[in-house]
Amino acid sequence: MSDCLFCKIAAGEIPSNKVYEDDTVLAFRDINPQAPTHILVIPKAHAADSAAQITAENSAVVAHCFEVIAKIAAQEGLDAGFRVITNAGAAAGQTVPHLHFHILAGADMAEKLL
Ligand code: AMP
Ligand code: ZN
Image 1 (tube, protein in one colour):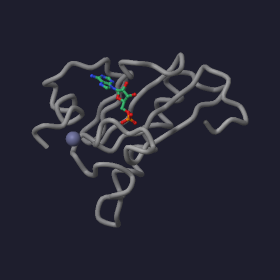
Image 2 (cartoon, helix red, strand yellow):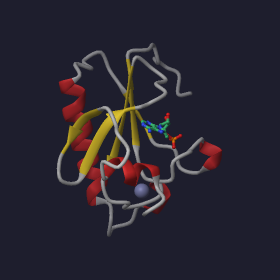
Image 3 (tube, rainbow, N blue to C red):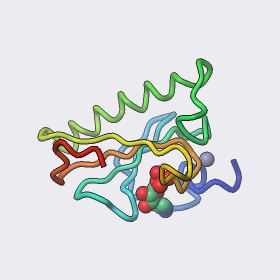
C-alpha cells in the first residue's frame, strides 16, 4: 500500500534499525521502545491490516513471522523470556494498520498481561 508507513519501511523508503530480513519478513527496532528490547516483526507485503484479517489465504506469513521471532529471540539472547503482542484495531492501541508483531523483553512482565 503506497501510503502505509510499514510498507515504506519494508521498501527501504524510510530507514529502520534492522534486526533481521529475508525475502518475506523484516524485523526492526521500535522507534519508541516500551521495554529494553522492543522489536517489530512485519511481513514485507501488506498481507493484512491486522490480525483481524488473517485467513487461510494469508496465514502462511504469520507462521513464518513466528519462525523469525524464534530466530530473533535466540539471536538477541532472550533466554530469560520474551512477550509477543499484536494489536488489532484502535481500541487495542494499534497505530500502524500493517500486520506486525511486537517482541518485548528485558522488563519484568511476569504474571501481568497488561
Ligand atoms: P501499534 O501501536 O501496535 O500499531 O505499533 C506500532 C509501533 O510502531 C509503535 O510501537 C511505534 O513506536 C512504532 N513505530 C512507529 N513509527 C516507527 C518507525 N519509523 N520506526 C520504528 N518503529 C516505529
Ligand atoms: Zn503496509
